[in-house]
Amino acid sequence: NSHGKEVLETNRNTTQSNMMTKNRNVKASTALLAAALMLSAGISSNGAAVSAFTTTTPLQRTAMVAGNRKSTTFVSQSSSSIQEKSLVLTDEEVSPIIRLKKGEKEKVVNAFGAWCAIVSILTGPPWALAMAIVNALADKYEDFDPNRAVYDYTGKVWSRVFLSLISSYPEITGDVKGLKERDGACLYVANHASWLDIPVICTVLDPVFKFISKAELSGVPCIGQQLTGGHHILIERDDRRSQLRTFKEGVKWLKSGVPLMAFPEGKRSQDGKLMDFKGGMFSLAVKVGVPVVPITLSNTHAVMPSNALFPVQSGGDGVLRVHVHDPIYPEGKTDSEIADEVRKAFMSKLPADQQPVEPVVVEEEEISEIVADAIISENNSTGKKVATS
Image 1 (cartoon, rainbow, N blue to C red):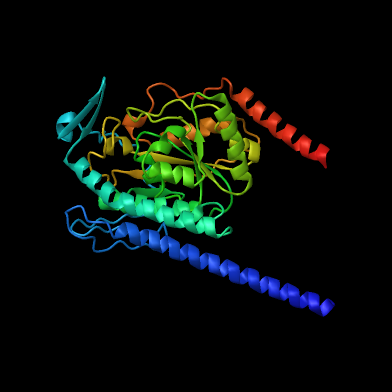
Image 2: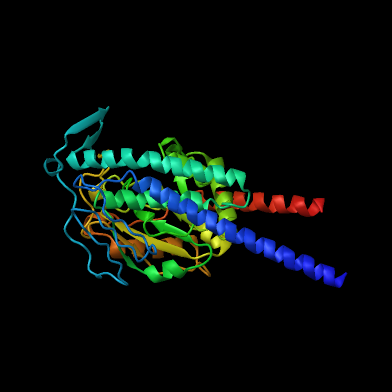
């Protein structure tokens, strides 16, 4: 009997090992398929075929576009000086060729934006197809992609391809090594000034993570498919129950070891300037005891301003910048103290035209009530389980 148990255990371990190897191979093949599907649609910014787009590790990548070769350099630290000159273009410099008006709001498209639209049209369908393939595999194989890591990776591939094709791959600086080697859950936070922030963030955050995003984005082509299919957290801004649900979902992901990514301002800044933080965001980190990693995004508002339907200028040559700050640990700190450290980190790297006009504060109202409701709800749920047992 003892010998038989050992044989069974050996066979079980061998089977599990073979399944893990098979899953890794399927994941790798799927990621390569997703990249191939999107790259097959790519053409370079001067209209010629892309001659090279090689990927090593996310933090050693050099994006090269034929006819207009530009390399992305990763360094340990950037200059401590703040960029004083604004890179925002005037309306005359933008030179719109299309103006779309709806009431008092206006969206513009210039020649560069038209090219970006073409790139989006060419790369969008392959991205959608890649998501559909991965989703089908996940439905067929229960253990294939439980956290939707492979599914989400298709979006990261699209982001890097898109930014490379429009010559806008960002310069990445700061604690890049720590970001690469960090293991376990954390809360990534970044300032929010443009639609371009999401693909830019995806150039640096390679491990699986979940966005806390506004629910309206679920209707945007491809992006909505990525958010819903990737099981990201969608929040209704003015719905208290949605806020409570968001808190509970966030705690669940963090406790399972999956990082979260959020914009503490709660919405995009219309002029690029850092805005007040919405309350409650850092309660997630305090509740679970995970570090907060601030990430400063510079000049995305200049490349794709709030009145533009697509980017209006290239973000290459160091225009777009991403700076990864050292992690902030929540032990012994309040939400406000963490928010203050995050704010100071953002401001240390933001250009002059993105610095807040007034001191940024954290909106404290209703935070304690929302967090308290979430904790009470969780405790009640736990109590019911104990009583049942």
